[in-house]
Image (cartoon, rainbow, N blue to C red; front, side, top):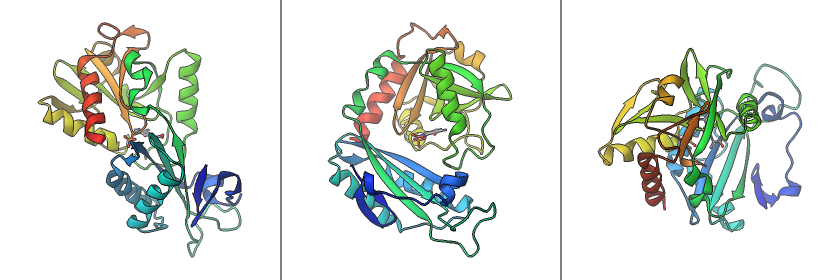
Length: 280
Ligand code: PDD
């Protein structure tokens, strides 16, 4: 694999980052994951805009211009021959040359690295036909989940709890209400109404979420942005999650309770089709 590190395209074995980089020592870093279908980046403008917002919120400088960022994405997709897959991007506050809690002053050059992941057949993942089973767990992350930082230890532990329980993912619950999935936004469906938590500091403002809600409205579905409980979700007609890597993924079981027929619901399945069609 050819990866990008601080200005250079190099074989992954040759990529080096300092042990003093704040991304490594303090998770002082933000990231984006952009999908690639048929060699084309999906919703790059949305990911670029959210990256800009994450950087601003953390008072971090942008390492390159937006145009350069697009060029690096395209170049990596080309050099690695990616048809279907992902581009992972990370910006760190950089390497001050030592460990200190305070931000370096003056600021040092931000770190920038990107790599691709090839995922042949990404759009027809077998999991989408079966649907995901999920469990609920307490949301024990920090309070600014709208900033896409690399502090992913709790989501990673959540994924392991799900694996241990023999299911696909976990929904996080705070003050009795679902926030989101470990790495996706969460939805329930009642009749022709789609219910998903409103945007705030509590959840990541998903790029796929924005696209899917727009498509749902265009398909004459009702969209209600409000919080819901696990009890309400268990009782819903359908459920699903969205993310750049899972697209629209139906959910068929929550904490052992089967939703509807136990198969992906028609609305989730249809939104998945529309999303993939429009992204190609
Ligand atoms: N995760 N919520 C959380 C906590 C996420 O980590 C993600 C994305 C989303 C969905 O956002 P988007 O639709 O913009 O991908 C929601 C990425 C895919 C990841 O960490 O790999």
